[in-house]
Image 1 (cartoon, rainbow, N blue to C red):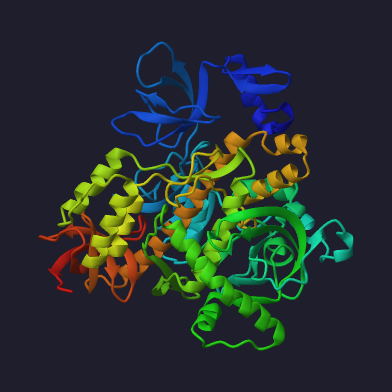
Image 2: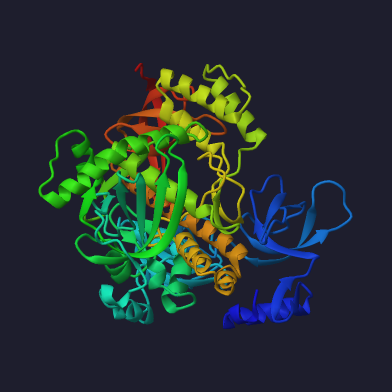
Length: 633
């Protein structure tokens, strides 16, 4: 790390680690001494774990003795040199815990109020005096700083459904509001004046359009298909024109790294003045875009040549997915000449993207795990659920974006890659054993791809396609960001990155900055963008997991509140786990709620059953039920 990148609050740590000889400093560049490594602890098994080392092409280190360290902790370790076998290390220092914040709430035990952890019900490190406790009610909830062991903030009461959002955000120290200095900068930008951008390629004559969910407000991407020249244009919001490195907006964007999407609203990565207006590729206005122009071979559909450049576009129409699906079904007609031009191009593009998908699936996978969409009312209570469907309009946009992402990944050797490593043999064996237990014939083919496709074929015949795909996904490695390429197993791509969503993903913003530097032949700017890329890719991978966990935990809390109102009632469900514990998923008027099964009777994996809800723990967001009977479907 360069000296100029060190923040004032980080300086004491740097000086301390220099004194302990963890770090070396040469020409104002700080590096870890060759004996030491920093990283996060991976999955803990039998008091051992692997240290995921921060750095380029450095192998993970095996930690034999964890002491008080926990999974996810950031630690400094000393390499144990001279030992044969797996590279090992010993923990020197715990720098930080993954769970920096937690949630406490007030309970009454043996006539006394106490503050306990919402997840474990154990006393929290922070304390409230009995006098302070008396001021609050039972089930009052607080945000706890685990490092300082202090109560930070009163969030509300557990009985109020609106507190669920505060709980999941506080746990990861997320917030919706932006500081005044960030908002001032965001509000200072003017509407796009094309005359101010004479060096940009003017594509305003091309019939671009956006296709997004009906509720979308931030339009990252627009497409245009030139059938005469067999050329696909993918225009992406040019966020990097507005968000400069190390400015106030950029610092906040790094901290957030991703937009978070809850059923009733979003918590954006960028201020809404940018994400929903100036950067958003709205229709009928000039917008700055970073565009991939890709020329395809008519027979093979390979990209024969491509270029990426800064441009001006003028989207002709904002479509939602439902409208394009209606158009494909012959139920939607163009309302004017400009709309006719756009829809004619989309009609010609569809067979191209269909073939691109067919070609992609020869190497990559297609999974049908169901994504549940949740509807909540103004009081934040669950009222309905539905299954999200991938329709032809979704597929068309997806393959356009995948093509642009692939082309972006070809343009650098070090940067931000989206990697997905093949699953381990141990995980695959566990998957095969689970599926064999329900009567599947597992035939190990010459490749993992062939074996899994055969499993999926059997699952379809058995009517458990979605459930088996979920198990297959769980058996795989987690996709993540990395500075060097190692391929994307799930997609079957040799190299892949994220280029198409800079409004809601910080990874894409870095890729834009890097590609601009490469285009300009500016090696100094390129190295500037990549200075701390190892730690940055690790950070955004962690932030991605946080955003996903927040979205999942919020839904779990809504399911728990709904179930609490239906204790004693019976519902249809499907057994989704039998080892180590029985779990089921509701398949009734409400879909997707995860149920802990206390009495499974003789239910087997993927059996359809009727369950009776017997208990709900609102604090832990857990639902308990027992199997009443099996259902013949």
